[in-house]
Length: 399
Ligand SMILES: *Cc1c(COP(=O)(O)O)cnc(C)c1O
Image (cartoon, rainbow, N blue to C red; front, side, top):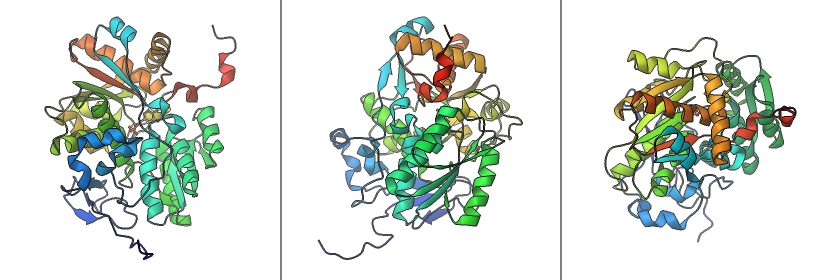
């Protein structure tokens, strides 16, 4: 070993690509979005050393077991809390009730910080702190704020979190627990985004918003990589995903395409179904209209706060993933998604969030319509833990 200083670009063997305009870029420093305003996606070189060794990932832990598919330099350790490695559970009772025997639930509520947002922010904060950033800002519908606060703390950095004042109190309290500076606004995540960008311009804090930097999506990609590993490198027929900003959906789509490219899986990709609330369903509407962009949803409201995203920067990519995989999009009423979460929590002992409830209710709809065949293998994502949406006092007097 020498004590020479590592150059900032050393070991960065990936590049950035914009699917909207075809531009490419190197990945040094703190990349944001393409000059055309659309998100950058990360491209890795074909010959990364570990990419030919599928068995190797079994010997490692956390989502970083897939480091050969992730933006990490060979000598680097990530900013981690042990995210990923969440259970893939077979739902036997729910399966019997819905009449679809091969039903699985990926329980992302078991992540550090209680949601799959941990995956994205572990990756984004790893890269941003490696490039020298130590102050962050982001708008959130809730769970991203918890994850950003925890991973910023882990990295010894600061974060300012802009959240709607209607965000569940337990989520806000978790942001505070991990030391994020909370700013509550009377509005939705779009309004919080404007305030966060203004703060970034004023203070120099780095903006961690969904798809405004290229690495959260790389962390989310591990949802798909891990699912493939847990299913012994066979892809399911159908994936139901509660959709807000869309990084989970786009990330999984990218994951399966990369696994196919390197020969880790074979065959058709799963059909992706995006699930939203009828109170905020811009992607469902755009899909139904055959549009390639989604209009901003006016007056968005849903108790599934992670789905209250009226306009997403990733709309084109999401719609493309749904169409290219032969999937679709379903909107569920709040009363129905809440009931589905309660029913499956009691039926299976899993703490289902309202967003997870939406995905479970959507499966029932799709099976009813015959869009999902009873013989198919379906995977539903419970993106977060249900307890984050409850306050202890709500228990009193109930039942
Ligand atoms: C953020 C969030 C979503 C939406 O995820 P995207 O990847 O942004 O579409 C769904 N469920 C929960 C619990 C969330 O926190």
